[in-house]
Image (tube, rainbow, N blue to C red; front, side, top):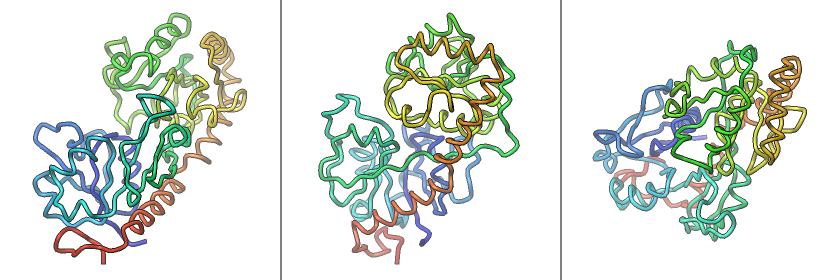
Length: 329
């Protein structure tokens, strides 16, 4: 397809990194001090040459083909602050990263626009949101890991990867993490993990090699979207142990790629089995890697996003003049 110029915000760094593997040019607005959404090409990621920082005050003078919102703030506030009126009439996509917070089934999505495409990252999320008249679709995660990193499971512990677990509380399973680590050796990785005795924040490029050494990946999350770290762990071949909630029951199969259950006590028993029997972990590793590389491969992800960009542009088929912000023909 035609190479596009896409404006988006830096909201979720890991997702943005994978999104920018699409063969388009991505422009990330920046502001001094890097307030929310305006961090641009933050460190820790191997950004490609197709990813460009652009000062927020210069955005209205740049030609784009599509505006990609990634948060309610982007849609409700940021676009009116940095886009020109003509740019706000460009084709638009809203990338919804999460399930509804206010009520799991009866929350109306904040976007109500039949000319905007709403993209969900899991089928569970789309099921729970009331999307009204806004056309929507699911694009599941796509990930990759360095080819020279292989699962070894040599560390007889579980690894947990959650940013800000302490402050995010029960929804992300902070209480379950504390409860389980009294019985099972666990290492926590992520932003502010040091406050819970964790290993701190590990860069995206370094995380796969670290995870691959652990016996299994523990996902204590009660209610959120499917974490990219789960997909990366599967891709590496880590057995996944987690709660049978949200999208995870469609991803992890018991005794094949890991274990899921709604009773934490049952999960503790399975974790102990994996620690005591590394051969069992190696068996589950094969199943985990198969589902990870089949379902969450980057090629499928890029193809899905290319189709989404094409369809979003088709929803607004009449372009405005290139002089006022449209980069297409």
